Length: 97
Image (cartoon, rainbow, N blue to C red):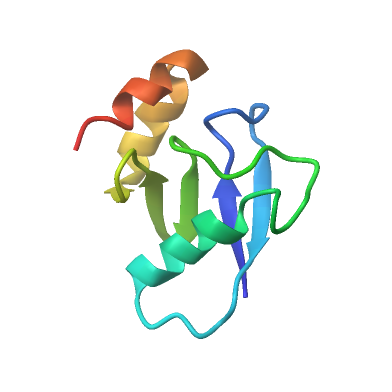
């Protein structure tokens, strides 16, 4: 299964990384953890940065920001505001729950 990740932490504007994960995830939290794990260039080398805190995972029409601890579900409006921030300031948002 391929999952799209918006590379908002260290990627170029509009950069998307597709992460291939096993399709045996039991729930959304496990799936998100797998996307983070397999999104590291150690496991799936790509011409993109590894998935990092501040990136946004797109799954089943929902958006989940990689937070310092866990993941934060975000609305389209929150993502719009988040992407409008300068890239260096987005990291601060990932600390807020």
